[in-house]
Length: 284
Length: 319
Image: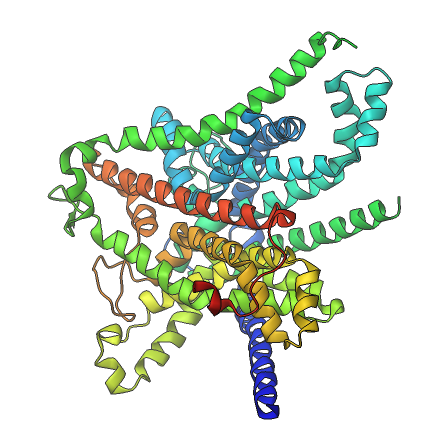
């Protein structure tokens, strides 16, 4: 009996150690990725990288300035497209939680969120690129926007649900219409959280490559035109990483460093903001 | 009291927000329709044969997608084999064992894995992981290399690299959901197990058994991600269409062939073939994700409706 108990304890200890180890195993790649991105990226990260456009093939030097601008433009377009739709749809779902349409919308949003990004690219290609007969920044922005919408909708819904019912009831008791109560009382009190969610969504789509391959495509030169192909950091990193030139590989790492810095900053800021919000709510 | 009349503002509010909500439904359904419409050419020409043949030749206009299906399924399956124990271990550690102080930071770090862009995984894969895997493959003993799973030259790029990258990428998704699911275990159950003298691992086993439906959901959520993952896989799998059980063999996936060929595809048949692959990818991920959500929802939404008492020795239940 005692032997069996010892054995049970030993098994327990072993399994729990394995669980702890799995955390370590998962964090090793994270550490490796960050280490390589920083150490290799930093070697090519100079002033030119942020101010110049790519050099012709075979020449060294040049930068990714146009790609960074492109990423800003495409992501901005995506947000412009997705934020109003996402928030208003989220309001609808939160306000009609039990209706059939709301469950259908929720299901659609979750489905859309799970659609592989490359498939979104195909969809936008057929819908926007084919009629325009040209790869364009606009189509890239729409592709990223389609990916953003479901994230924003679900975040908005969840945060609206956290708003105390007394706030809404107070507004309604004062004679506000349903819409007025939502837009002047409920939504504003959830807004900081929603904006945090938008920022996270933005960080996620700014790092997307697959939906841009045949929508925004790529461009070696400065371009701010919405109807022309445009470069992006992610597609540029892809092109450089799969090219045979060492100098371009270094630039790919630098581009990855910029991307990772962008994403990590957004994640950490969003997390700090969420914490503060939670503390403020707890303080009520 | 009679219901007050709905005001014009309310109608506008309902209609306005409803319209945007409807937009999401339209886009989702629209994806299916657009992909269906754009792949009619190959659907009509090849029918089911498209998925049963191997020959992929844009020049002669022959398209068979079996190799890509195989690559997608095999790489996702291998990724799950690696990531499932890891994700479960992380979830158990964070929900049952971890000191309170460390819980949030560690959870945040594991979730950062999900925040890193796919292209960065790919870049890291090409220049760091693939050489490491190549060295590993070359160091494999001969008797192992003689098995079909490790046959062929050790080139680094191939199924093993793809599975490894995929596994790392989906761990945070599965582990986050598994944690949520484990949270749904009533405290009374854990306490009951301890009161009966269970060790930590035994109590955890009971919790896992109790949440098995949700755990399967968590794994399937990871599967949905793995099936559709594009860039990182494209960069390390070798992009060679062949059906092979060998982990060392370069292969190809559905998402990868779309990423590589679509922008350059010119013949309508080639485009249609790629879109049809996209349509199937869409359908498969939709089914997997829907099933996964259903399972997770069943587990986390109504814990009070489930029996608190789960059998202490799970094996006996089958009797």
